[in-house]
Image 1 (cartoon, rainbow, N blue to C red):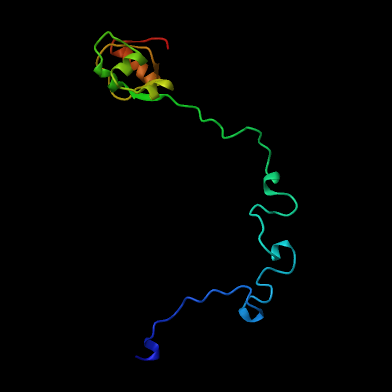
Image 2: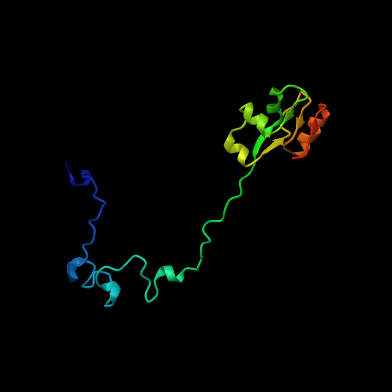
Length: 144
């Protein structure tokens, strides 16, 4: 084996702090001169005279903003399981297991996706497209 065939060692050894003037970091080990930060351990939030948590804005009980719950979305084609001339409301959807109790809490909105084949009276929130399709099929949209 010749010298040019040896593997190259690229990783350098870490500089050893606090080992004297000849260690590569000098007599102060890279901490500057004197003062609290040059000596022992300091708390994580230390910023000088005033603690970090006191510098932040005061938010008495604000917490995170509440995210308003959105209604569960249904397509018109899901209402085809019901018989004609039936009044469809949240109770009927729960009974048919189309929605769960958790979904019903936030309300239900019918969108105009798909087609409806039976005439139903829908007592739910509906989009304009869904309202037109329901009325075109011979049904009615009641008040919610």
